[in-house]
Image 1: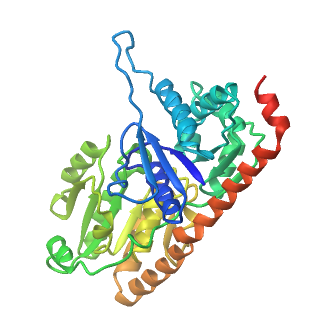
Image 2 (image 1 turned 180 degrees about the horizontal axis):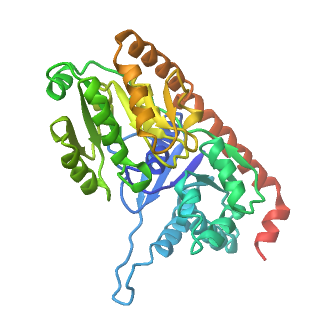
Image 3 (image 1 turned 180 degrees about the vertical axis):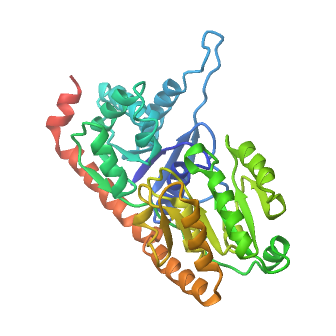
Length: 387
């Protein structure tokens, strides 16, 4: 198949999943075309069957804000026509689903029907998508997609509850690439971070309010009072300054390291003992899954899709949002005893293996083929779109 993938080229979950999915499909012989305004971070090396098409957003004095959606739609039309794509897969509903619909209509006027699959990732539904400024367009675009997938059962339920959707939504879980995410010997890193054998706690996110990063620091303070520990905070974003101020207020600065954005997150996970994710909303929890693949137990809230990957009392623990005391107690249960920690490590890896990329790729391939076959044979739908 010749597959076009549209995504945000960022460190966020949707961009990471889209990039890893495309590279996985390319390894299986499909021709994959990434279409976005900047090369995605994980698309850093040459790979056979992978192509990148940059969207050039013209900067005219007439526009206060350059019309990226228009530039993207034009690029989609161009790539579909000249690369002879079989299907477009757009990640994150806003604005990619409605842009794909516009491109599809333009191509249809030229006698070319391109099937579009939209993958819903989370905040495009649970946060941004609910905004009155976007909601009608989000609903319309989902319903006009040829296929729709969601990354968790929880997100599918949220979508159906908040929008009037007349399309079937296929749940295809996010995944982990075990060629990259696995526990390796990084003892020199560990000694640099925890020279006196302290436990290492870690959090990875984009430091948005929904991630509740200050709660990580509050949990760390309570844990460190019982079990000597260090905290690594990976990522950056609008809450970082607040978190730095909180560290000073709680007098835990010596035990906390802010590392900013990191490409080789797996090397940091390889030395961690516990991953903390206290989000108030999480459609899936890809960062938690990456930690589990590196044999790191997860301490998380029970929000959204997190209970679908983090098994309470087995791979880690689930707590209510804002329940700092419960999270701290659960953390101490895991890291205060080596035997218990090793058991949680083993369980975390076993659970993560069910989300192996190689297990998920066939689901996407089969779904793509189903959508392509439906569009080829459903001439009635094609004719109605021309009107």
